Image (cartoon, rainbow, N blue to C red; front, side, top):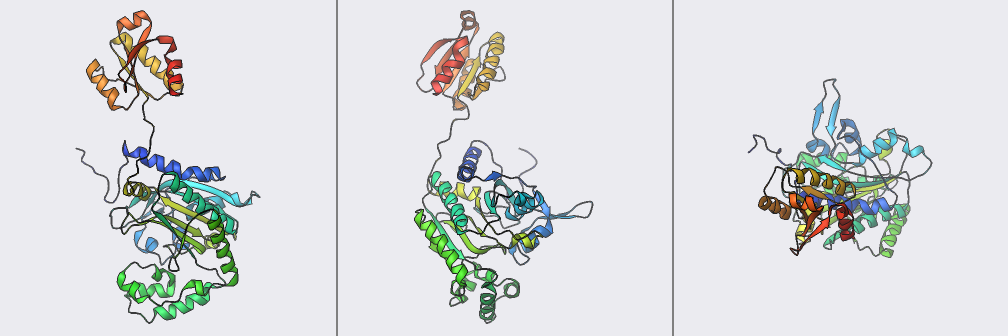
Length: 420
């Protein structure tokens, strides 16, 4: 046992489970890559102000959950709690929006950090795949991103997820609604922290999960009743495009999500098999975020899907992904000369694209064959002095048990042919 353990609320990804996480990441990324999104990677930490401005001073993420640090030079930094603000900052810094081809389409994958109470599906270190379309205001773009997320989930075999959809209006219609909501909330029996939110961002109170608060919100004014004509028309186009694409959704007038930068389209994917931590991903439009962090007006939309939560959703549905065996061929040398020859053959097979492993450590035949079986390989290559003298290697099918000699110089071509 090591003296050290992973920090509370975190986890290690180790084989064979790590292969499932990789497959989920690749499945989520595949649709966005086909839709023209380019990969972007940002640092694991940013200036604190990027998140306090963009994510919002009143959010739990900023007030309670950010990991912050002060450098030796006195800079205030934070481990990134989400991806959108970092990606937009990087796009602005690189002047990607000035390339003349808007929207700028970007996707990313990485680890994020929030100081939360650890529980199933909620970690202090978690993994997401995200996609952002920067610089265009178009309901088709909102619909595109939602459809790509749905396609990613379906490609994994998931069925029991639901799409919740809402519109948060814009700077034209939200102020009147905000005032009406504030008037309503001030008449409720709320704790001090929640009352502070009424003045800073009253919409966040609607997102409060406590039953004592939700009971009092019955009869609260709904944003959908205060949308301006432009926002109504925009939202209706998103809904029509999703319907035409065969994407089912549920209108959720209380959906606001936990970030202050959302405008108009907002959405969340929930899975009914995950209990209280049912959200597996979500996103929305954030037309004013660029200005909030010092950039030009760049209407944008995006989402982030949780890899950890998606893996839990797969388990809840009893779905086992069909993953390729990490090893296709396992080489077992008998004797020093065979060890040298087979090691060279292993290198040749790997360079030809065949996943191949080797019996390291001078194991005897029995133990080496046990290792071959444990590796998941389909074939074993076994060679001793007599085989080398005859210019052959024994090719054993580990599924059928059949074994036959193969000329040493044709092993690579035969194995490539066997793979199809």
